[in-house]
Image (cartoon, rainbow, N blue to C red; front, top):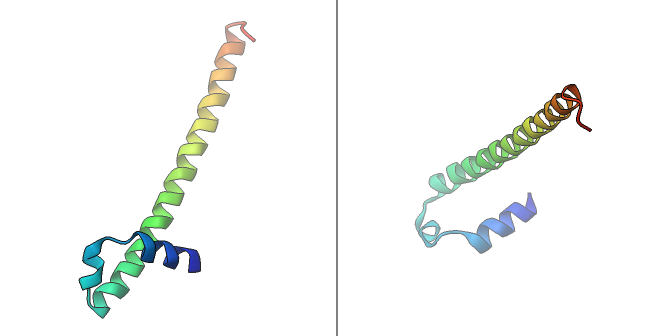
Length: 66
């Protein structure tokens, strides 16, 4: 959590200097949600790649290739 806060402060857009307290709280929640979705998407893409690679190996074995 601390690392995310440091990153947000270091890499934030200039418009973030002009948000009010309510907007800041909402952005914190949205940023966390976006990070979770990115993580889930990355995991799903890796799983899809693993399935694809297994299917390719089966296909090659079925064709008599090593």
